[in-house]
Length: 453
Image (tube, rainbow, N blue to C red; front, side, top):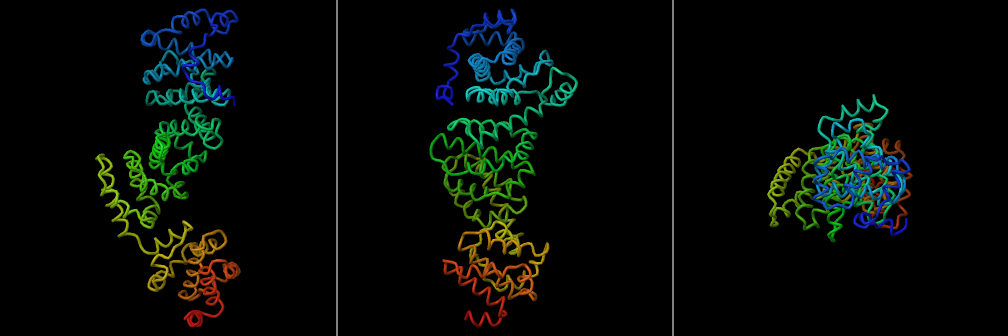
């Protein structure tokens, strides 16, 4: 894309002179349309504001018809700039698009079509304008729009189509940027508004969009990157009220990233959002166990000791602290162990080497056809972290030692060859624990303990 197209500003575009008379001559706009444009174009802001107050729907119909019927890029850019200017001056003007007199107009289709066509200026303005229009629609209007869309050939675009079309374009920008510097900030900015809509949350999850947000959750230093981080966290916060999104978040590395941001950020608005997200997720699924394992209780103590001025943040920190305390009381040691295995990152936390843990919990490994044991064995194939591999080998040896059929179960799950490969690992901790596991697998628990001693 040429730089001049990518970097066009609204002011630059609005300095152009558009040959409206020529468009009337070629019947691309009507005589009435020409009259409206002459009254409005190049006039002072206060004068245009009065025209919109008096005859807003008439001007909207004129602008939308131009975008529908005229394809010359410079003219399309110009009309989009006019609408953008109008909405930025007063966002409440988005309501004009939903005036009853426009019920027969397909106000959405031109903008949806332009999302995928033309240069970046056209795409960005179409996205922003659509977001304004969607957010400005009256509550309870959606069913009426859907009904009229079903009955009328003129109004073919329902609000569901619009929201899905917007989400598809926004996800496409997050995956493959049309503009290297602007695509992601624009997409996140629009999503942070649109995700207030339940239908957008649903479409976003179905479009596999949640995973596109996770890499953007990282400590930020510049003003621009802090704003992007804030809006990304706002998106995640909105999604934390939607169960299918919560289930997806549980499969990602969002928690470690959020905690890292809370540790490193000095911006109250960012920390507040992260704490609100954590508070929402605390009692969902296994998030509470992960938070404890990631040291969140200690971080909350540290955050509470800082001089925040935001009362909402302080209240949220207190609520999160109380919730974590309750969670720790309820959380069994096996729940914590299971969560650690499912996350795929093992460490030498005390329970691994605690004989009481293995004695009391070894039968819990039988749940769901030895699910956790199977995951533990899979880690031997998939992990590249030496500490994780060493702990996995050690845990298998503990299972063999404490379960009455441990050797048979581990053998049937084909763990032997995987562990034997690790006996030649470059890391001494891995080879030591792989050897211990093989000894117990071949020689029995008592003899392996004797060799280890």
